[in-house]
Image (cartoon, rainbow, N blue to C red; front, side):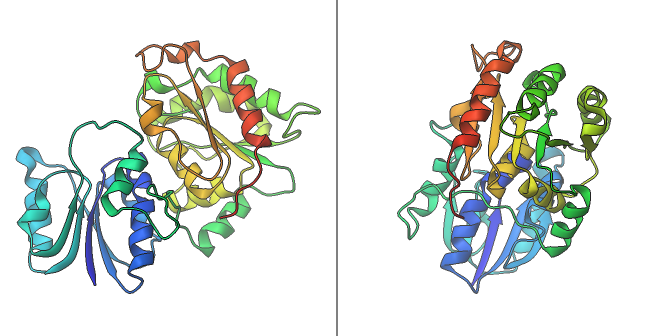
Length: 311
């Protein structure tokens, strides 16, 4: 069976689509899957089982990237084409079956919208949880980066938009509260994660400077499979609404998403143990400063008190 899976240019949306892919692979364990995605999302699928290859769609003027894709896939008769971009591309190639997500904003969580394409799985769940794919090499590297017996807290103080970022000093205050004597993660250290580039490094710099030896700097230093393995070693992840937040939730690590201008009802982290702390006035553009340390701490403590959910 040959499946063409066209997914997002953004990491967060690509991660959310992994549950749908995982369900397809479980239904068709011998299928060969070709993934088409944007450059920054390519690593999400690098360790995916059943992946034949990945086609990286570099956005071009006049939508010529779709012509590039067509040239690479038009010679194949596909058993299934899944188009999560709502582009109409699925009807430009030969296929026995097509599943196309409707474009534009729809009500409800993105995960439920994705699950509706395939219908319920064998467990009756219409919204398949995302998964994070990484291998033994990434596990070994994560163990080197986050050594020792003390717990680790992953912090994601960056985002693709400055208005989505919680103030750096509040990340520091929350970490101190969670790791103080008698606190849920007493003595933990911090793993600071973020994407590549000077802008994300600048967002993370104040947190790194304030935490000093209590933190390890991993901003822009990891592939996505390595980041997933690092997040899987953490006792807790706290981060702004971002691709890293969704990747953390996909690993099963307790994940607290911080929300201001983005819509929590559509993009809350989806995983076995997740929670959100939402700023008053959300989704207002400048609502993020209204989210207090006390509110985030209460959400984090509630999340850590939840019983573990088997994978």
